[in-house]
Amino acid sequence: MSRHATAKESRRYWLTFSAELTRRPLIWEMSKKFKLVFNVRNASVTEQIGIIALELTGERKAIENAVKWLQKKGIEVDPIELDILGN
Image (cartoon, helix red, strand yellow):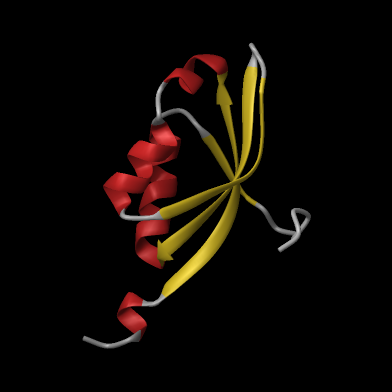
């Protein structure tokens, strides 16, 4: 097994979702399903909307599949382009 095949990386995303989706532990479900570590960098949830800055760490393919899974659940997922959250 090559070292590159199992290399871990981190990517950051903005998740935007409706208030009714806040009642399900979707981030936890995603982390278990795709074997990813997550770090909530920032969050704001109101009665109308939820916005989370989320860092995902794991294998690249697992991160890509997790993003698709979240989108299928009705969550808008956008990459954080600039390091506005700091290190």
